[in-house]
Every structure is written in structure tokens, then in C-alpha cells.
Amino acid sequence: MAAASDHGLKRIVWKRIKETIIADCRKSEVWKILILDPFTTKLLSSCCKMSDLMAEKITIVEDLYKIREPVQEMKAIYFMSPTTKCVEAFIADFKPKPKYKAAYVYFTDYCPDELFNNMKLYCAKYIRVCKEINMSFIPQEAQVFTCDNPVAFHSIYSPNSQDKKKTLETLANQLVTLCATLDEYPGIRYKKDSNMENAKTLAELVDNKLARHYELDDSGKKKGKTQAQLLIVERAFDPVSPILHELTYQAMAYDLIDIQNDTYKYKSKDGSEKQALLTEDDMLWVRLRHKHIAEVSEQIPKMVKEISASKKQPDGKITISNLAQMMKKMPSFRKQMTEQTIHLQLAEDCMQHFSNNVEKLCKAEQDLAVGSDVDGLKVKDSMRTLLPVLLYPYSTHEKVRAVLLYIFSLNGTTDENLNKLIQHVKIEDEREFILNWKELGVPIITTPSIFPRKTARRDRSQEQTYNLSRWTPVIKDVMEDAVENKLDTREWPHQSESPAAWNGSGAVSARQKHKASSQDERRSGSRLIIFVIGGISYSEMRSAYEVTQAVKSCEVIIGSSHILTPTRLLNDIKVLSKGPVETFTIEERSNA
Image (cartoon, rainbow, N blue to C red; front, top):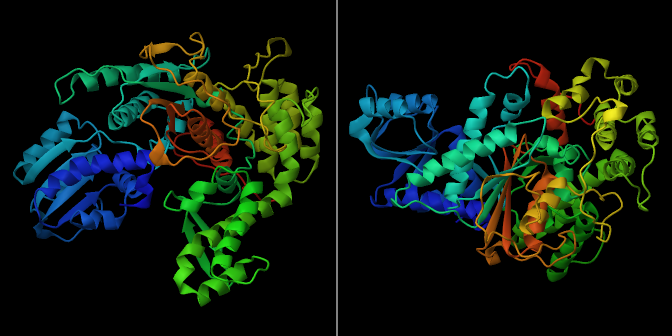
């Protein structure tokens, strides 16, 4: 089994795939072909490796949409989404002439009757199995899932969107499959918002669909509510966390370095191009990803020294070129050193960006976000905090982020003040980066008499923090309040009641240093599932792990349509006022 599948959601998903798709096919001892669409390719590669599939007598994995050679003596397993495009591609494999001996068909979700009837009409004699396995989400990490739908942001928040209702329906169906995979029937709550109705609408949709799903369960028994709670909240609930510069390893790397599809590309000392996957297969990544960059920079060289010492390497400064030499000389521990080399390089890259620009920005950002300085003194004049950032030659991108944090800190500003800021940052033609936040329900322009009040935060003054990492994502307050049963029902109405016994046992602050316990020791207690409409940030993902570690009786799982980086979010915000086809990009990380 893949190392990644030893973790939480990934392990559960792979187990379910084995119990459904693989178990059916195991009945026949012949080698088979597995045919996937782009979504199921991503789903399967997130929780298993090719070697796992080979062990289950799957010899070839093919793309449903590509032209394939017929292999008429072999049976084919189709794992696909229930869409017209997928079903048409499937039918084309058997009409007019079959490509395979037989088909075992598995849909990620409910297949509409029209599509099902089309399949029957043309391919009935070739279909041995046709099942819906209720699994249309991606287990991104042990406690993080996505719906793999970044376009949902535009569909839900653009004033020009034509498919908001359909998008919310799709997300609801995907959330139902998550609950089904976890075997949970949760109580549902949503964050009440006088401006936006999306959380309420999605809560209603999920509640109705879950009721239908468990009514029609194969067992014939109606399932009762389980010890789980699902909270649904909109992105506007905390606009600060996805915009702020984060200094924990994972969040910092994805913000400052161009990491696409979890792939980190870098140059080795000999100038050759290298790449590394940042996934849960890399156990060092799992150990380091939520630590502050100061700890990471300190720990990696220590780990390398330990390995060097164990191989009787002389002490000395640890550099990439030294490591390369050691690896060449000692093939036996090359594999052991690879992870350290990657992370030494990645941490160096992060620190390079930090010392060039980010360090100076962080103090102003933290003061604006938290509302007080390092000594706890309240920020009385936010403009004084912002001004040094505007006067320094940072990139437009960095200045836009700082201006947004200034506006968020005041819960909106005047039209006149905003125009001055836009001129100062020289984004007169790109003011949508700021103005379009109103489409999410974030106050941008307000009159002085009606500045909305700020939400009260948990007191974290006694917690150990770094001076440049004092901000805590708002969602962490919610997680801790939820497991302590302290969520206000006026702010978090119940769409459906949770069982009375639902209660994590007294959360303690998760910022305190604690001993990490392995995922395998995780208890089968209650679950808190949080879904954020409009994307989640890496700092919010980290919060789920921190609260789970601190509160041993409750596992927190967080998810969204997609994962955000500050650059991606700003680009998405900017195009909200455009039509659905146009795309624009922000100038990234280049110094002005």
C-alpha cells in the first residue's frame, strides 16, 4: 500500500475503493485494464500508487478521453464521473465494435437516469457491473479534502454568473459523498450572514440530499444521526487569513514559490533541473509542514548532521554541494538523504524570499490583522502602519495585499480614502483587486457612521507565538468553540440538529507545544467537518490538525471547492466582474 494511504482520509478512500471496485474484480483472476477520467485519475493518485493497483491485478491505467488500442481479450474497469462526456466516451468504446471483453462500471456519484438508459441501450451485453460508489471528492491530505472545482468561486460570487445554483447543487452532492465515505450522518450548521445566503442555501441542499441518501441506503434501514457535525461558512467570514504572509513552512512555500500541482521545481548545484512532490508520501514534509520557518531552518541541518554522524561523516557546514558529494559516495543511504536535500533547498528558498522582502512586510501586516503591536498596544492609526509599506518599492502584488489588510482592519473605508490608496499603489486600471471583494460580502466602502462592528476573538495573549506570526485564522476559534459546544445558535443556526451527546471534551488552545501523536493512534470519537465556500488557505488547513492534536476526542476535517494561495485568490477576485471566459493574472512577486 502507498505510504500516503496510511493517513486519515486517504486511507479511508483507498480502503473504500478496495472494498468496492477492487473486491468485485478480485472475483475473477484475470488481469484487467483500469480506465479513468481526469477527476478519478486525481482521486486515485491521491491515495494509491501503481504498485498497489498491480498488486490487485490491474495491469494498465488508461485515460477515458484518449484514443486507445482495443484489447478484446481483457476486461476493463471504468471508474468515472456521471457526466454526459464520460458516458459518451464509454459508449464509443463499445459501439460499433467493442474494445474490451467486458466492462465493470463505477460512478463517483449518482448517475442520472437518462445517461444510465443510454448506456443500457448501446452496451448492456458488455456491462458486468454498474455501481455508484459515492466518492466525488479528493482526499488532499489526511484531514483535508477538496471538490477539485476552482471555477466554483466565479460561479458562486460573480454578478455575471449563470450557474450559481447548479454549482451549489454539485458541491452539495460532493459533500454528501464525503459524509457517505466517512459513514457519517452529521448535524448541519451554517454561519448566518445578513448579506449572503450561500452558506444557508448549501446547508439546506446538503441536509435534504443526506436525508434522501440515508433513506435509500442499501441496508434498508434508515440511518440515524452520527457523532458528527458539519459547519458551512463563506469565504468572507475571514478575508484576512488567505491574504496575510504566513511563516509556517507549507503556507509560506506555496505563497512565495511557484509550486504547481504540489510539485516543487528547483536547480541542483550542478545546474540540472530537479523536481519533488510535496505530498504525504514524504514523511519529512508531514513532520515539518506546519512548523514555523525558524524551526524548520533549524531542524533540517540537525537531521542531516544526525544522518552524517551515523555514517561517520566529518562535521562541517551543511550545504547542498556537500550533501551531493555524500550521496555520490554512499549510495546505500542516498534515498534517506533525498528528502533532507529537498527540504534544505526549499527552506533556503523560503528564507531567501523572507529576507529579501517579506520580513519587513510582516510586522505591518500582523499589526493590521491583529489590531495591536508586538507589545499588545492597540493600533490607533492604521494608516500610519500602512504608510511605510506604500512608500517602500514593494511589488504591486505585495502593496495590494497590505492595502486589503488595512481595509479589513477598519471593516471598510470611505470612497475618497480608497481612491487615494488606489492611486498610491498605481492600480487605477486594476481596482477590481480591491473593489470586487464586495461580491463576497466583505465591506470595502462604508460611510464613517455605519462601520460594521468586528467579531470578538478568543483571547490568545498567553500563547507562545513568534512576533511575526501573531495572527490566528478565525476558523480556529470556530473549531475550538464547536468542540466545546460554545457556538452561539443565533450566529450558527442549526439546519438539522446534532445528537445531544455531540461534544468534544474541552478544547485547550492548540497553539501550545504538544507531542505529536501518529495518525494511527487517532481515536474513533466524534468528527467536526468544516466546509468553506470559496476556497481554504493553508493556515486554515493547519488549524484543523492543531485542534485535532489538542482535543483528543474529536477529529477536525476541513475542505472546500479548492485550496487558495494569495496570488490565486487575488486573480480570482479580479475576474469576478468580467465575463466567464476572460482570465487575467496579477504581476507575481516581481519587485516594482
